[in-house]
Image (cartoon, rainbow, N blue to C red):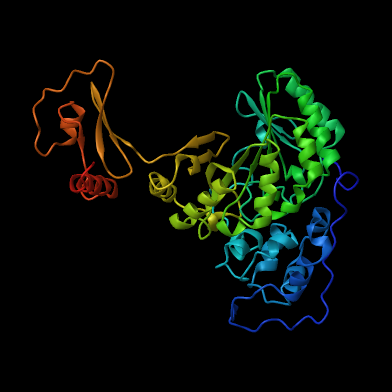
Length: 451
């Protein structure tokens, strides 16, 4: 990686100390006395002309616990925050910091952005690189795991260092962009492997690069005849939506087809500014997907997840993946049992459109790749029929090709065995909302004369 300073944003600066900073908020026994709202510094900046300049946002990221405290009017932060930040670096854009409503773990924005002492908990099954990306690099910075896909790491810089990041081993340690020499080696590898048709440009966050610098990467990848699809992974629509400006969108259109996958995790991130950023990309013909991570205390509640997914579809962002949190050092407090993810999928099916339901996937440690997990909708397999279950609990005998016709006998109180043998078509749960609607429609038709 080379420095990004000549081709990207200016070097980061500490936010200027606000005048008239109030004293730190009182606390007792290491617990905040109350939830704290954004201080005058953030409130004043958000109304200023520089706020919508993404370069300004990148330069003024909050990089220290002291800067974060000042941004919230000298607020007290939980004990151990500084210790965690010394192990896993801190960076938050002023925009994303302005979404924090409480400086404690009850706030889902705070939890994703601010270091917590729980990041230092290190059980033995966690790894710095559990997906073994480093071992699957054909050349430095190019991960080739699946036969037809490769992941190109264009930068190590992010607008914000998410606390649940799967690349915490490199995030924030050294900010830089891909060098021309490294890019040339990666392109050479792609040319030597024409089976690679799909290249994902990631990092870090490629949209933290200056537009001309990112264009050099796209131009180089597009020069490989066998590359058909280019995808870009970026969280800037969430953490720095002003980055999606006209210059960037116009450049991306020149290298179509390009897909962008972003990373909304909570409904509070679906701000008007984020919606506008997504609309600019979609209106330019750039399809948008979303890759959420299932995070304990943030989006593992079914109602919260449903609200998030509905909001994404309204913004024309297709929910693509819901990731199980990886076995990365520093993220154990975010992980949920696999069964909880399956319960979420069970909850969503039948409640929201299939368009709004992501695939729940686990990226297997050891470089095993992504596998989808689903609740079990196959109840039983027979010689001629398969018994399937829907979200209501309805069981249906689905005939295979050539299945014998039913005997015509009516089976009272059928069992799963009767279904798998084709002797009964279904078992209906009682009192479902759908069958209630059917009954009301039947009763209504019977009571209404048609002239």
